[in-house]
Length: 391
Image (cartoon, rainbow, N blue to C red; front, side, top):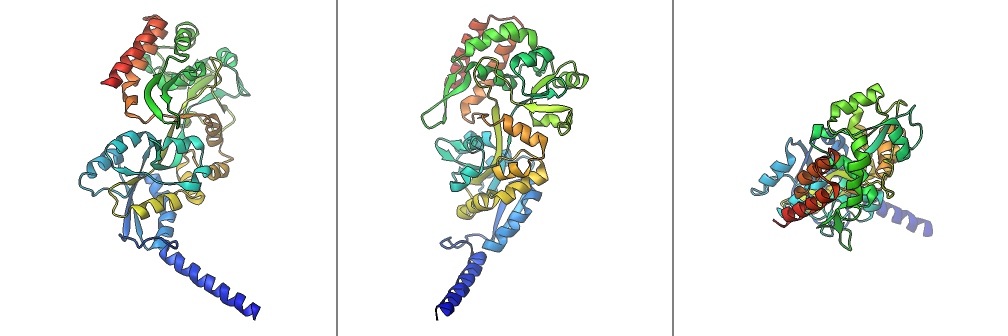
């Protein structure tokens, strides 16, 4: 009799499992729509085909993967007609704009958070809420000629072989120089007790030391007229041994060979060198006709390891997901930049960031070229940016 009860229980469990596979998880509401629209790029469209098919099988909802060439602009404009997508893929630094326009919904990624790099998850947080599921990340590293620099170098090692860093022919580049600035303890914005960026500059903390370095050693090491092309030529010819740059450089230097190594940028000022992190992920539209199932597709289907691995397999982009990173263990570019970015800081997505770039870059260039005294220029820059933020 006991055996028979076990058999009946097993059959019942199988029947329940079959029903759940057709209708979604127990407790899920009935779908309000029979299809969801997801705006992606061409590579994501291909990578998500399997997840869309599985979602259709489980919920009965068709996922339309639509390639959109201007997702940010079109998403904002379509929100007024409420005819936009249910889900849109995009950069994490859209958040401030999207939240201000009330076009995206917070999502709860729950236990999935531990499956991703913590800074990638943090990139999609805004005012204490999570608004996106990460998929890929980018940050800077130090690319070096492997023969000249066979192991992780110190800053003195880098100086000996020469450093390439494009300053855009005098236009400046605070984005790349930030890896050096942070090693003096100077960051762009302060954070509140919950780790959220505040529109309060943190340039004073170690900033004057960095400015003095720019005027001294920096003016000798950095070429104010350098460009992307001159940096490529310097690395290819061997006149420079290292280059602070990102994974996009693999288009001109074959980083998957043993000719180059990828390292963390060494400290110049004594503290950790921290670069900006840019993340890409998936947002849920506030105007979706079925926010529950839009969230479900993002968290339970796009967010799972199998889908994240497929996104990497198709796109080759550096995964934010830990399992996808493990699966890419033989990819030197992925592993090199991933290790270099472990402490990378998400590029602030707050509106105040737009007021920073111009004065920041111009001030650095004025100091490097000797057109301005470091302390005076840095102090004036802070005052100018604070005034711009206030306005």
